[in-house]
Image 1 (spheres, rainbow, N blue to C red):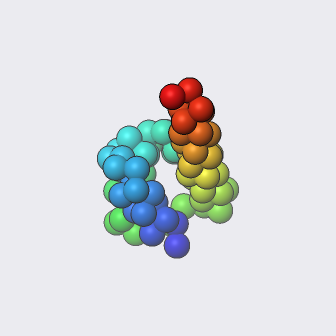
Image 2: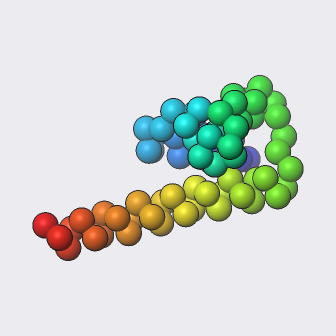
Amino acid sequence: MLIRSIEKFLRYHEMPPTKFGRLAAHDPRFVLDLRMGREPRDRTEQRIRGFMEGFEAARSEASKEAAHVG
């Protein structure tokens, strides 16, 4: 279920739900709407999952680069 993945993502990255919504869906109420029962379209869900995967990959890459610099 998408909302579970998002909730884990938010806790792990200590990101407010409104910020996630703005970045991932261009909708600050996106997470709140999901919590209230909104069902996203398949294409929207794929886009959100892609955002989370890309965010994780970029963060991993940045931490690797920082480790090489220091």
